[in-house]
Length: 428
Image 1 (cartoon, rainbow, N blue to C red):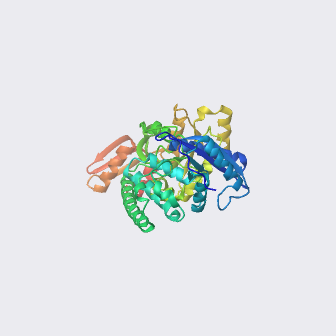
Image 2 (cartoon, rainbow, N blue to C red):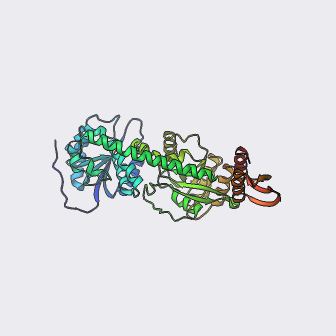
Image 3 (cartoon, rainbow, N blue to C red):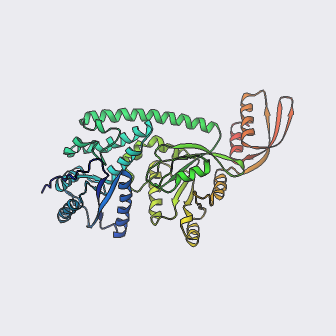
């Protein structure tokens, strides 16, 4: 039965959302409830007030409507009573399921993937970020054109419908493919420019460190602490979309380039991972990853698994990783000790209060091979390559003594082991 669309007369107000989850045979009820709680955070980040939460225990989804017929009818009545504007499912829905559910409820229906894409569209600020989000939205939409029915006619009308490409989504499949190809070309150019910037940074001899972690784990706060920057931080999800790269000061005046990247999330849409490929290359090309975990979260193990899955998807599983438990000011001392025993080599910090950050700086320096070695290096001032290497030594090392004999210069220096190996490889 098709229900009449509810018009609450709240134009311009925050949308009211009903959340729906499924506790299937492989999903415990507690896990489903925690997932719904996370979905509520996503809905809030998108600009909605949650007015209803429903979890159905069912062996497997119903092919036509995802939920059973009785639950669909009951949910429709509950949406009328709570004046919900839209229904958000914690799973990805097929085009047929979306169409059938919209007809049954008489209101908009979106799934978890659409909600995440919508938040990214809301957060995108730079041209690159907007291009990436639009590509992800169109890649998600293309296979769903058949069966979407009236959904295309109301794009731009609320959560799950906005984005940089909203005026182009009313086109046919051929024009969508044309736009996707155009966006892909533009992002390929962005990727080439990023690659050139990385090569330039590598020629500067500073190691690259990337922050990775579940969304809202405190990566940007830690980034600010290590770099003395003032990047925007918030309790909201997905605040950082565009990577920031700044120099971080480590132990004993040593330095590294630190990048803050987009936060990961459980079931991060594959279209987003593909669209943000140029951005996520910063992760795969890093010398060290700092995997930041919210130590105070009850779901930290699930969050860590989700991050590892995304790292595998972007080909970064072989990059050395330093585990960092953040927000340790919010956990009891015995719980912090238990975490460190369970994860040997991990570091516990409170980025907000600087607790443990000196230990982290030393750990980063050690993992990067920035521990010092005292050596004597000789250079020929007539040789252009030697002059460049000597400049690096003066900039990166701690000079102990220097002696010149004609065009030959001998420098006694405390130099990080990592750079000593690079100098040897380059003929120093």
